[in-house]
Length: 460
Image 1: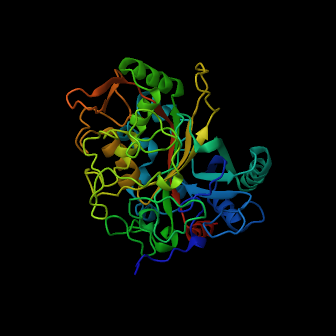
Image 2: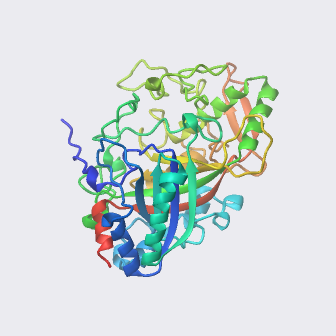
Image 3: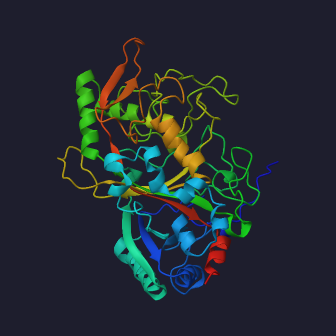
């Protein structure tokens, strides 16, 4: 019998545990000018006649839009939370993304001084609007109402950033995205979304604070926060990542010519999946297979488990390179520093910028991804993934001298990526791997439960 506490979905903001799966998003970066005005603005988003914050409660008919609210540490301090209460939040959240940037590889062209938001720490709130309708319909209507509330309560708009999904769920590098989201105990699966997974379900305590939830360390991420502020809250890293699409496509062609292989095979080895989503573990090549049924896209592992003792053992990375994107950042049951099936995060990101047409010349337009990485603790989950499993080379064997190939901050003279071959003494070594992504903005946000938002609104 499960001992997982029952989740009060009415108290959890939308798009945290259950994705809203909309085509369009707009993230407003805001700053309050007074405690009472900002608190009243939050209250209006909870109970006013205009746009309202959405919850994860079940709906029979999909709403026209969803709205969520995140607050930065400066935003909470500006609301008048006393220093003793601010000290109850995790150090990484209080310090903020810009202060932690260098430890994550966000230096040089990816340093906070180059960011479109988050670099100066001026943002207090992030209001995110999600809709399926065309942005000139629901999105613009909600945006007009929000801007009216901002003017009424003295909340300044510092910027707004749009994201728009592409057909088939692909992103700018051409991969199908959003496949390996954690399944969570107590969260029902919507019809059509069932995707069997050989990984165990995650506890809601990996992503929600308080309420008796248990995290991967058999504790709770609430810490010393008062329950009326922290219960059913989460942390979200709102990250904007520029993708160097022309550089990526040039890399695929260059490596393919050098080793006389299919460029799609190179793309699959870097990611760990073919660009149509099929995992390399189940279809190791040498050419891209037909699309695989969704029911099989996560039904794989890299090593045998007690539940699957006869499963294939890809310990040497012959099928899926040990250094590939999905294996480094989600090693499943493979031997790796730390407990298996831990450091889980939820990804809620979509592309920004115009779609890339295969074969086109570089048009100089910016393309990338923007959205939340949701977790219960920024340092133990999000930062650990990038710092230890992504950017360092000692989490497991076969990584020495390398960094994660898609997100990693490669050295100026190029990074290394190793593809094992049938001859163990003669692997394919890409020794001039360029940097393929650059951070363009980052904020560490607290996403309170509805009860926590009501406490903040009461500060008015």
